[in-house]
Image (cartoon, rainbow, N blue to C red; front, side, top):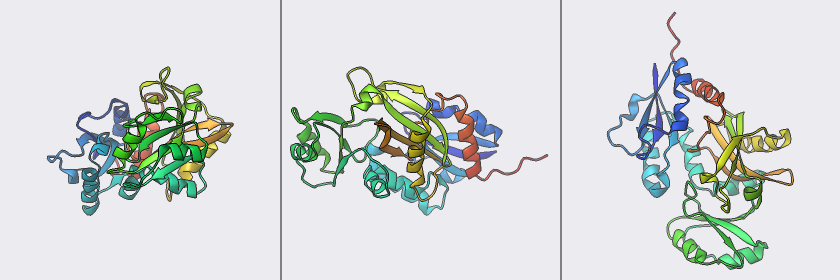
Length: 290
């Protein structure tokens, strides 16, 4: 058996339930999986043929420590999937600005660098937005994500100023499609489309993390636009989740997740096998003895 690690955090020391559906399909490929907490000093990283980042959902609370871990793995010449350079790039949501420069339609956004002054009212008035969503550039799980309106900024300016003390901020135009129609997630393994889910927030909220989801078929034209996001990368990653909304038939990118997204393997009963096939294509598995 080839041993690989599913990288996780202290909250899920045995790995996240959704990822565990891939264990049996991976065993059929001759691949054994062991969950490993990224900041556990007792882990022998060199015992693994490869490390696949999965549920490291506390990285944003200590980003410098996580970057140091990436440096350590890179220095040892270990196989990390997705690759270290791609992870570093995807950790900071300012990558959206780069994708926009590559021709991808991104939800209209303002990017504010750490320590830079910004006035929310001025941004919304200049952009002509009645509402916006503010979020740290390094974050996960809707942490410190807030919806604000021009008529009631409340304490949002104070929150933004606090975030900017140590990390960048993204101000995105609020898209009502999230509440009315939902947020789309397209899953790709080794650059090939696997499945799509539509996530809908709880009543009265705009954050889909605590909402519902369903497997859904995408219009071919919209799927092509989502595929173009993955195609904008230098090479196809092992896994990619393309999140966004559809407005007037056009897919607008909210986030590209090639770092630690939930893959929604339980939502599509055939997707775990496709993921396992993609992993096996990347990991060197010794041929089975006859």
